[in-house]
Every structure is written in structure tokens, then in C-alpha cells.
Length: 143
Image (cartoon, rainbow, N blue to C red; front, side, top):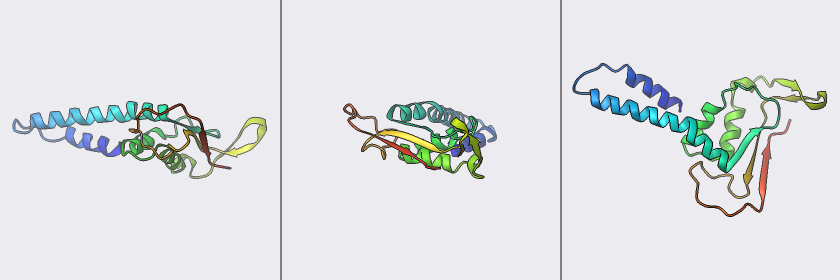
């Protein structure tokens, strides 16, 4: 997603000429369309397929959505993308902690996910019909 945003910025500052105007405008519209898809449909599809979240307290504005959307847009596996993208966020690199339920101090920003067993390596576009799940697998990062 970051590369699409960067390229869109470059397109918007290209010099205007009659010869290239139509091509640049179409390219801008295409980039804007792709960004909307990354920010909405990809994340919505991922949530229908696998549910990722946090096991411990997290920063509401940690920025996980951007890297996660980019991973989904690259057709990376949904579950491992969520874990890799959260664990590589700068917000949690200093290993912050917070008092959780019962006053127990735990590390912040530990990702978790629930997936239909056998489908944890599917990409966001693996949307073929699946039978009712008979087994779910839970993933989490320990303290």
C-alpha cells in the first residue's frame, strides 16, 4: 500500500501536457481505486476468512492496518501476515508493558488469530466456498 501511495504522489506532481494528460489522469484514478480496495475490501475479506486481533492491550493507533493491508494486497498468507506486521511495528519494539486484568503486567501488542484449521496459509483472495468449520486453530504470541 505504501508503494501505491508513493507512486500516486509522484503521478500527481507530473508536469501537465496535452500529450500525456489522459494517460496520467487514468493512472491516478487507477491508483486511487487500488488504494480504496486495500483500505476496505482486502481488510473486510480477511476478517471474513480469519480473525486477527490482540491478546494483550494494544495502542489503538499503532498503525497495524497499513502494513497488514499491504501484506494482504501482496496476497501473503492472512495469519502469518497479521503476526509479522504487528510484531514489526515500532510501537512495540521497546517491549512496552501495561497492567492487564487483575493488575498483572503483560507485554503490549501481542497478536492473536483464529482460523479454520488447514486454512491458515490462505491469502485474502482464497474465497472459494468452504464447508462449515469442524475445527478452529488459535494462534497467539506468549508473554
